[in-house]
Length: 278
Image (cartoon, rainbow, N blue to C red; front, side):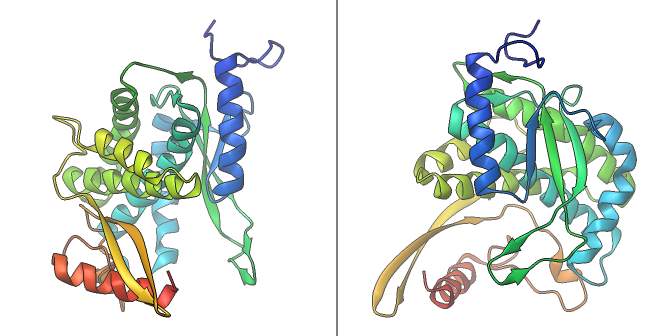
């Protein structure tokens, strides 16, 4: 029996208890992604099986912009999937020190309806999210390598399926996946007041030597601005890949787009910081 697995009738192991505490924190901080442990089997599919239903996930991306071609849908899907998986797995890792087993023969997913209201803002009724079901959790003297290897193994069949369905190159997709890790870890670190540590872990993972995630373009940038006479700072993740949003009807370049030069990125991010008030 896996010492980390919780089979229902058996008392939870210390590792499982740590994972459950991290899952509870994750659900409160990031409800836009689902995460749970082995036990609830309803409508979950192993990653390899879920890839056969990729058309549903690709079609869903069309809600984010009009006039998406297949490659743009593929780019958005990989960005969406990579970011959600990084929030779920990264949240557990950064909060507990445990690395979820991300092997595609173990990790299961469900694409499910999601009801959300944020203050006065009401989100569309047909909103959906990815829900990841983890079977077990691990620790290693080199947790960055453990997380990296699991993440790459998990994404490989997804990326190959997206390439076959949309023509979007694997290189472009791996860059978007790396962006997902870096962006999610930054969000988790900010929520947990451990931003510097989270960024260090993310860079250690994506810059693993020989990794398809490594590009040299991905980085973090601290932006300073004056808001109402008060100096403010914020760290942004600058992308290594492109989501191709600029190719949609009325689409533009994101403020952190890899296709923008560094000074344009900084200028746009500073303006964003000033508009947001910090």
